[in-house]
Image 1 (cartoon, rainbow, N blue to C red):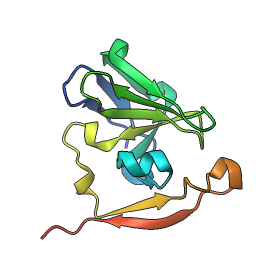
Image 2: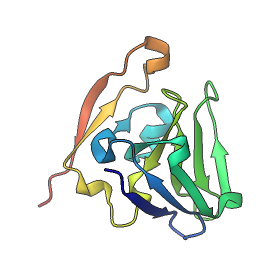
Image 3: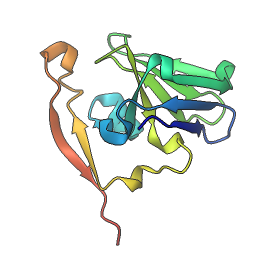
Image 4: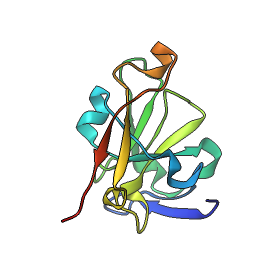
Amino acid sequence: MSEILEGACHCGTVRFSVKLLGGFKTIRRCNCSYCRMRGAVAVSARLDDLTIHTGAEALAIYRFNTGVAEHHFCSKCGIYTHHRRRSDPTLFGINVACLSGVSPFDFPDVPVVDGVNHPQDTGQMRVVGHLRFEPE
């Protein structure tokens, strides 16, 4: 997938475009303390493949634990748009719910990676489960 996707936060202050790394094949959730509470489904993009068009000044950053991961969110509506990955700081994780025409419920099976036992600490990326959506 080499197409450019458009995205935005809930209120539209932050608007961006992104070219995903491997399309939606990189989709995942994480079970670390922050991601468990945030509940987002993310896909990967290279740092150079994300362009913030408007609202960069409205983006706030949250860091915790090692401080390597940067979780970006709109300071007006609070929606997480993307984060710089601790597991690979050359990549962003992009919130699929912010992508135009995409919903986390479009994916029937989302792997959950082990962020509690982080790959930078253990030396391995491990899938610990799957989040499934089965429409009625």
